Length: 473
Image 1: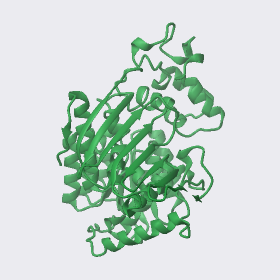
Image 2 (image 1 turned 180 degrees about the vertical axis):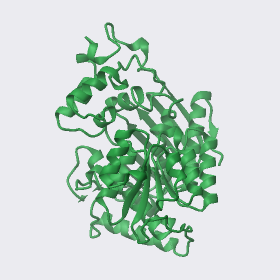
Image 3 (image 1 turned 45 degrees about the vertical axis):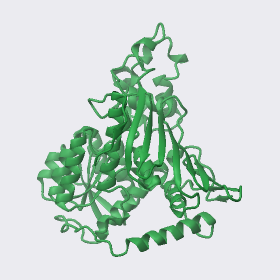
Image 4 (image 1 turned 135 degrees about the vertical axis):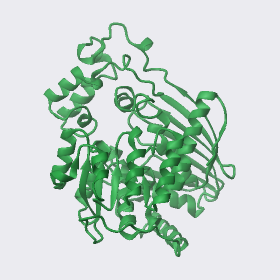
């Protein structure tokens, strides 16, 4: 067994490990990477706009952050830990507390801390690139405006909740000649890179089918998709786009072929008024049933706070991360509501069947009713198969009958980067691309990101219509 560090109990705190190139996994990765780099030789690079007014002209990339919520702050946090790579020089955020906090953490002067993205866009170009981490419905306008001003773009997924808006955004970026990276962070995980290298090496032969599970987690689903910002399609985007466009994109990346046809089934079955227990109140703090309810808000948020875990999701519900602040949020805010008395319409289970160019197939399953675990995947090839859990990969060889286990996740000082090292990998790739003008480090550029967004839209149409839908680029 090849191991790169001890197991990590919580996948969200895994980061990119040191690569042991003396190991079989490291050697395989190094060999495949060398092949890829050779294939990239001679490819063109994107033109880089002139440095922004007042921005550094060295290799340190300057960034403006639009949206100082959880995702914008996470990417800015990577910058703070890597000051030799990038600097945050401006922020746009309508909420004063979040805006002032990010400005304070990054030493941003008041004249570069804007209450809206429009104010930032109205100023002379302040940075080499912009991180667009606004709400799902508010990505397109700032992205297009800033692209036309010469900002390279890192845009949080999804690009937009409507198909034509996605096409419009990508077209505008191409017309402006700037770089675009979409925050499909799963592509950038060390685990994914190792898996992709094994698949591309031919070690398991031709991949014919994949099974992939996203176990969202009962409390995570209740937090984000029943009580939270992504509970309603009309206020954010539908569940498959809001949460699982990561997974459809990841499957396309691993298989390495375009998705041509999709079908899907799923619905909102449990988090509905008719499933409300007898005697349940509208809010958990008033509810006699709460101690026995698996979706208890006090148990989730106060429990974490008392353990000293003050980050997400506790930091999402209140700016005052104290017991008094959490209780006030549960008393008056959306996160204290009974999960059976919300205005949610996000599905709580869904399956998608996919067919790729060349005939390979995959099934994807998203389900709320699980522990909060990492994704589970099985890959079936003509010479072997692979099982993975987001940390460990077990590779089976049909010829020898042997198996090998490879482990990629390790803890480390950059644990807050999140997504098993994916956030850090994305920021590393994007800032490198901006610094060099070479887009080859970006794994989630405009072409494939648009393609996989269109596959997600097609799958949602199939769910509503009961059809098999073709994916048209």
